[in-house]
Length: 190
View 1 (cartoon, rainbow, N blue to C red):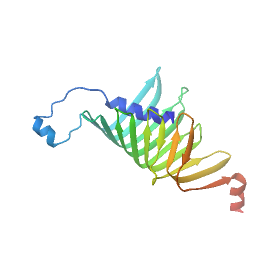
View 2: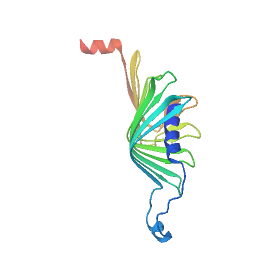
View 3: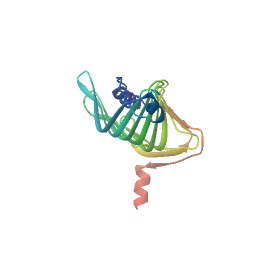
View 4: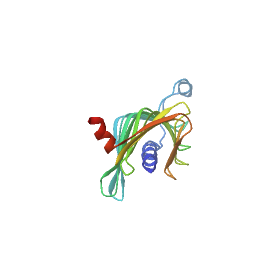
């Protein structure tokens, strides 16, 4: 979950720089919403201690000052370990962020891969609370988690909640899943 906090926090930080832009009269500003910043085909890179720690691309990203809002579309990212290897990657169709409360909503074909944990999270809508390090889906939203390793475990359910602090997850709604071991895969091919 730390990699998600890093990605979402970095996106907000890139766009949270302030300056005053004049969009015309106050009357015009009241009738239309204009972003403070707007980026297209943007590539972002974050370095920590001289090492690349995050790379992110966005087809579009906008930041709004008055409501501390940030919106992006067609986002993809890679998180790097200290040795330069990829520790996580992911993508989503849309992201909205409230930089004031450190809360984020991802939607549209979400995929987040954590290589150390060998986990993949997939869904259509997830929320991240950076203050509490909680990742959650709505009670009616379906989330799938796939874990690779000696066996392949796929769990799909509703009412998803995960803690980045305790590194645990749970579903409050209906859940289904499969476990495939190397032996069961061999038997299926016989």
